[in-house]
Length: 181
Length: 168
Image (cartoon, rainbow over all chains, first blue to last red; front, side, top):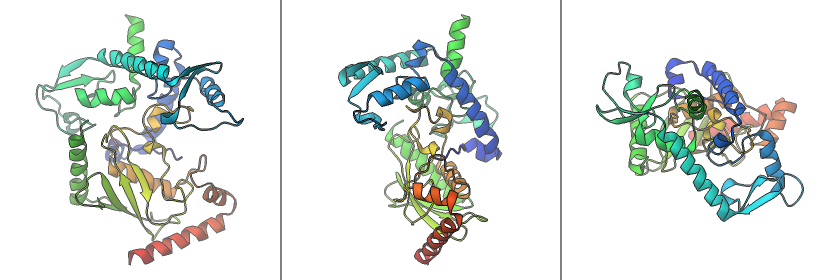
């Protein structure tokens, strides 16, 4: 699998290489946080964060011996730890809890209305749907101060807690703000 | 993101690519009534083994685009470590968003909703020029690329010739 990252902006700026290196560092930072509360929110499918958990989970789910790579959608049994397993229905419940927690987290991000004052073309449109903001339209502010249509970014944050534009992890910034208040 | 919004975004990109074509590829639809299935023609990048080739590929967009990535498949036969023998492209930016289970790819290396047909194809073209053999999709091609480069070159050259015949 090749890891090449280009975004619309990189193409515009011709600085793809530079950004992709920056992204890698940001990704590493994201992994360093090990708070339990946030671990439920991290990642769209996986319930575990640390590399070790992931490996043990992988081996535990294997009846044969070597590691097998199960597709996420067909996984029937959930292994919170190698020795504990739960039927899939409980997992569904866990997934719902995770979703609810993430929704709660997203609701903590400030909402505003677009005032039409953006000067740069880039800031006048939502980077997700590529449609220009209308004056008084509801927008959500991420900690990096990038704005998107409320419905566009909320749908995205349910899948990944990163700013699509600058790749800044949203949860890390929120966690910091919790700690300081 | 509704299906209507997804199709509007794709229509916008198609119109923009028709108006201002990007060097290195041309893009259109497989069926003009279906905005979710694209056909692209990639020109083998200059100064690479693929130079001179014309490689046709299909992009299949989900209704949730741009929240979810499209799948990409080469229709023209192509020999490359990161393209499966059946043509499926294996590139991290086309993988579902979020951190993956195995911790192999970071969220930032996976799909982002800011990707367009243009940025995807630029990544794929750069992949042609610069294969990654860390986790190859075509293990035989990767092994050849590493261990018997002349054989790898010969196979790519055959694909390039074949692609030219198919195009003419």
